[in-house]
Image (cartoon, rainbow, N blue to C red; front, side, top):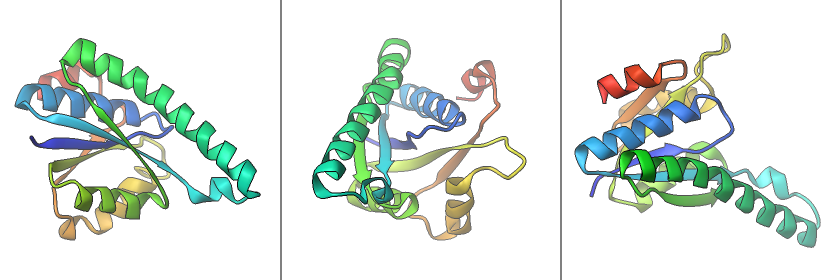
Amino acid sequence: MRKFLVVLDDTRECLNAMRFAAMRAAHTGGGVQVLSIISPDEFNHWVGVGDVMRAESRERIEVHFEVFAKWMRDKQGVHPELVIREGEPVPEILAQIRDDPEVGVLVLGAGTDKKGPGPLVTQLTRSAGTLPIPMTMVPGDISKERLEAIT
């Protein structure tokens, strides 16, 4: 089954990327894989403190994921899977694509900020020509109705 890989983070545009991935998966018989990346910078403390912080980060991610997962299951009939990796975002995204051959499309939300579409979109666009799969960028301010119409 082809999976749409979408990155779960704390950005506003993440919501539209999740919606798009779920709707496309529902319409094409695919799946959704939600990737969340924990930065290693969060754990530069004593070992015990770092372990507690790591566990708290994972718990926060799982709660955040469950909000999206419930919507995907209830509204789109899609049962997403969660993958949590630790490291720098771009290398971890590329590693996940390499590690799971069923991932067929990378879906990213593009920010609407005057600074640009966001660091992930900016960095991954630079290497778009060498990515092993297509990348879809979803505008951060596109309406739910427009998303439904195009998926």
